[in-house]
Image (tube, rainbow, N blue to C red; front, top):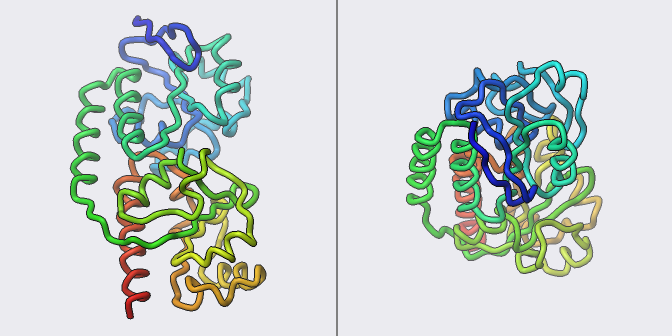
Length: 278
């Protein structure tokens, strides 16, 4: 049994050398655990842990900051993974009874790589974590700057949300040579001012609907029209993009953000740049 110091909790967390019953309240941690080959040790996840598909068959423990106490007590995990940010107080409450290790919510793409390494370390799979780290770094090493456009990103998280300088989403756009409308705001996320967005006339618009919702390009066209944005440059040029699939895509900071979301963003930004030039 190791005692790993948690900067978030300000105390040491007792962690088995090789945890056998892991509970994850973080979709990113869940995806990472499976990619590290530890899926069989995962005994419980949240309703939002959908990557990989095998995770959906695990016992449901609650949501991001709620817990089914009777299920958690029955599973009796020897390690619980959460994140900071919206789960900070939740993690503190759980830590009074269970071994909880909160992972830092990444503010950069590099932070996602660090997140993966830390999951490997506390889950007793340090070598596997370093291996996944190397694979992600190779993927990032193939990136190139594809666009100097300014984009507007909006995700429906129970209301319109955009992203400031403390977001890994903003960092991803910067790595690709692009920028976000609110990218200099000193925060992780914010509620956007729709009039300000319209006045800024962004080059491209990226939209992500609520998780599990059926939302497509026609729906986005209707939404933008209802806001009076039909005349915006992004709309007239066709530079409006809905993230693929019904799952969190940009809002997910697991390994697939690097291997799937960033390449998708690169392709869309390159397309938007071509449309503007033509």
